[in-house]
Image 1: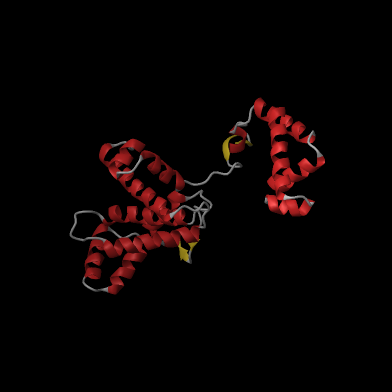
Image 2: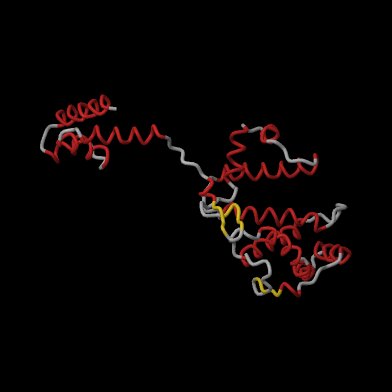
Amino acid sequence: MYINKVDICGVNTSKLTVLKEEKKTELLKKYRAGDKSAREELIMGNLRLALSVVQKFSGRGENADDLFQVGCIGLIKAIDNFDITQSVKFSTYAVPMIIGEIRRYLRDNNSVRVSRSVRDLAYRAMQVKEKFTNDNGREPTVEELSEKLGEKKEKVSMALESISEPVSFYDPVYSDNGDAILVMDQLGDGSDDKEWLDEIALKEAIDKLGKREKKILSLRFFNGKTQMEVSREIGISQAQVSRLEKCAIDKIKNKI
């Protein structure tokens, strides 16, 4: 996303106006009274607010025009649902609405597909987390979240992780004088000496099998064929295939 981009969705963002609170209140009252033009003026007068929220989501590789449009949807929802009888500033109400709309867009368009139920749990968890943080001045633990949601902590943790942005192995985690250290550089090799020694022993054990035994194992475990299909291909009965297969596996087990 280009933070310094001036023209977004055909709108020159450098010329966006900002309405004062008194004017917003006046227009909201007119809109509630049925003045549709007041709604349009409210939208145009709060586009800079939507833009400021959108800019917080920069650096995710998303198209600026798309995010701005989604942010405007959140703004419109805020205008349509704002309760003018409450002693709350419109911007205080609108910002979470815009953020929520953008988060839903990013979640639903994530390259890793997540089930609707898991996404819904994650969204509820984010709402509870935000309220808890505002009330207590700190973020809740997974245990506290799970208790308030009435869900197992493992399920809550999985849901929150499911909506986090996927990380590429080639993303830089540190850069010094132009020499970047990538995520893949920080990953250790999960295998140990025993694993590759076992692989060598397995290969040697297979090499010592007879030609027919190798053929049967190859067809069965590498080509995924049934014993009946193998029997037809090499011209022996299924019972013989079963016996030779078992014998070959026993030989391999004894070798390793």
